[in-house]
Length: 80
Image (cartoon, rainbow, N blue to C red; front, side):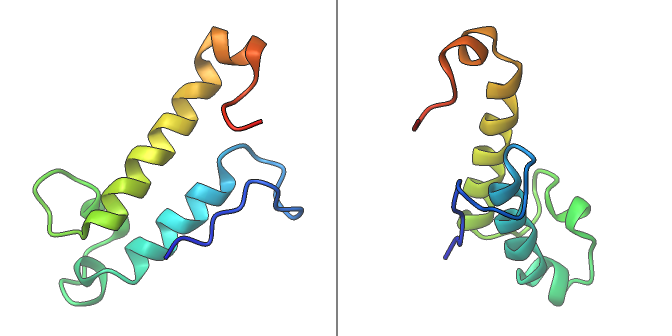
């Protein structure tokens, strides 16, 4: 399960909680442990990664994209 909390004190970077969850999910996946691929290779389309890691990848992409969206910059990120 994701351990993502937006209000983490240690990290000041945006989307860092989702990044940490994606990293741990990929490191614990069969693609990295059994197939001995790098996490970057496991994120490529067509590889065998579980649905939770794919959902975290989409959430990380959406979080990063919201940083560039000018409407979000003025209104603030969702959930606040």
